[in-house]
Amino acid sequence: MSMFNPEDYVLSVLLAHNAAYWDVADLLKPHDFTGHRRELYAAIAGEVKEGRPADPMTLADLLGDELGMEAIDIAQNVVGTHANLKAYAAQVAKRSETGRVRDAGTRIAQCESYGEAQTILAAVRPEQASRIKSVEDGLSEMVETLQARFNAGAVSGVPTGVAGLDDLTGGWQPGSLIVLVGETSMGKSALALQSALAAAVYGKKHGKRVLYFSLEMTAGELTERAICNLADFPLRWLTHPLEAPDYAMDYVTRGSRMLKELPLLIDDQCGLTQDQIVSRATQLHMQQELCLIVVDYMHIQGRPRRNDVSELGGIATGHKNMSKVLGVPVIALHQLNRGPGQFGRVDRRPSLADIRASGEIAETANTVIAIYRSEVARKDFAPLHGTAEALILKQRQGRRDVRAWMGSKLANMRLESREAPEGYDETITPDIESAGPSTGNGYSGGGSSGVRSRGQSRPLSVVDGVR
Image (cartoon, rainbow, N blue to C red; front, side, top):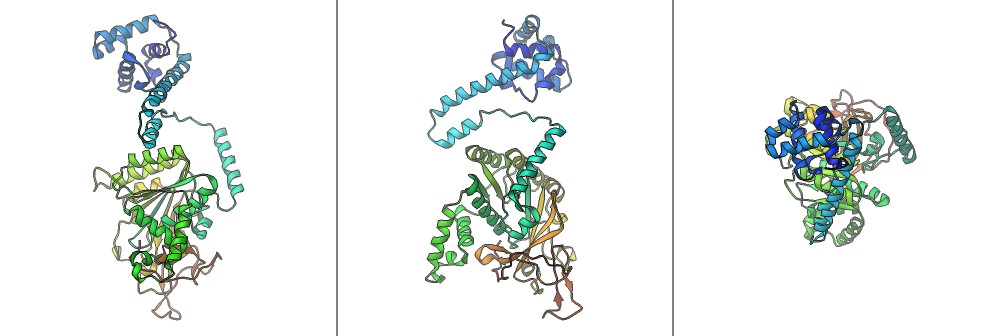
């Protein structure tokens, strides 16, 4: 038996020093070994994890005399030292990966589609051990990020699609999970789609793509909404074509051409599990970088226990890990936990406590944004009709409890940045009954008087029932 066989060298060290297993546990897996050595390594790992000794005699009792004799042979004839363990472990890992590459090449040659080949190739690369970083590493990353933000200007991340929201967030940041919440018909999906389209415009300039998991709507429905947003015409022209004006087709054609040029990918398979979403996103990211991932919605993802809210926290953690590993911002849509008028509130602007499985989701997310439209929540309150608010309930790297004002143009699937209405500013404050001049219904806007100027758009009427 050659003492220069890296697999035997690693096993000899582990048999002599069981604790050394933890030095290579993040680098080697049983499938990296060949023949009986695979079973020996798996047995050593299992015993060490259980806190039991892993010597040749115990392995013989566990695996049988034949493997026990092989363990004794390795222990007696191969002299390995702890100092060189990682170097030999790296050789084992490299040999294993090379073997998988060759095997993948053979299987790829027999594939009938590029998708099959991509799946095989994606499985070749082993998990990469995370590296413990020093403060110097952290400082270096900080300087690189700071320089990138300086070069990018006000919007250092991926544009949100709403100028006022860009002002408050700096854009969607790589590695961040953004949870977008709101009651039914507030405009969550409209804002998510608008963000996806803005990101696709950004991605086209930077050679990247956007991936939209549409678990509720079909690709055709999402495409209709995207065309309406881009060409700025009512969705009803597409859903009720006999009622559309003669010039409607000009808008449809223009919107279609604009959408066709954008690198937007849509996966509309319903009931996708977290593992399926991560797998598909990872494979597409390997082919060509993604700049944004949207999941619409979290709560209708496939999960074993549909009524277990703790699973929603696990799904949020999975999205957060995906965003961090791929370095891509992830927007995940989610429903609120409460119904109309719950808790006896007059003001129905959401809070973190209103989010279903709020504790885990709010803790995991980098940013939590709620969409609120007064005309849906409080039809008797006129001052804010025609407006929508993006309420920033949490933001790890920026201001919280502030809002971006938008003109709600949801008949055309659009939300347009606007300056704050009279009597309001960016700070989230409740609507209060006026003691002064009437607005026509006994209410006036609450909040402080400072108004930050942004690109203004005229508030427009909306069609209720559009999410």
